[in-house]
Image (cartoon, helix red, strand yellow):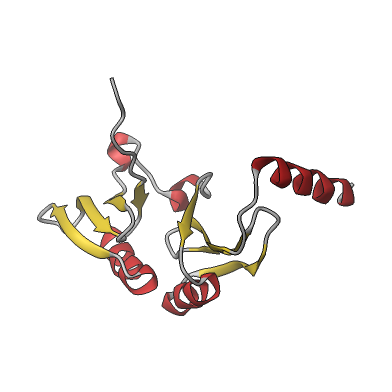
Length: 148
């Protein structure tokens, strides 16, 4: 028995608009969508080049709701890119809300975060150095002791 892949599957209010946003903000390419005659999207797949994202409209009759209906998200999607500052600026220009500007992080990445117009949080970063798990823990401990 072996797992092959894992795909994030987002539910949003306004999937067609979300597809448009993800194309403009992140350069995603729509592979296909399954839509009801009303236009409600039951399933869509977006190719980010490095990963696949599945997406659908809300289906409250099956208790399938997005962050707006639930009062926020508990999930962060991490998008590893070549230039975090440029990708964050692109997402904000496309309609995302800046949550945290890009900054160098203790774990060897420059990253920041945005919230897309549909309520999902995206952490966007690029590598700036290779950091061992031990060094990362040391830096984390130091950072946490400063905040006490």
